[in-house]
Image 1 (cartoon, rainbow, N blue to C red):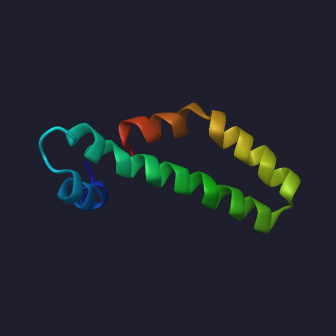
Image 2 (cartoon, rainbow, N blue to C red; image 1 turned 45 degrees about the horizontal axis):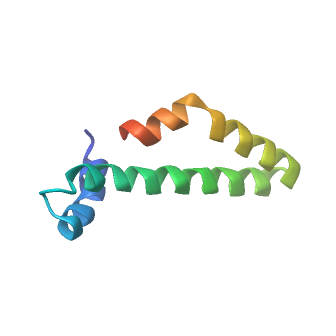
Length: 76
């Protein structure tokens, strides 16, 4: 596990605690990062190209198995 993931987990562990919500605390930050990366990817494509290309790219990143795996497993 990288240092970035460890630092991102810390606030959720402080709020949710160690006991019952351990799984939620360790996975919630990655769901937020994955959602944020989809939004950034869309806005980047929209700025570089146009809205039609950005929507097509958004479709591809949403169905991309690597992005889904990154969101589920907490990969960098």
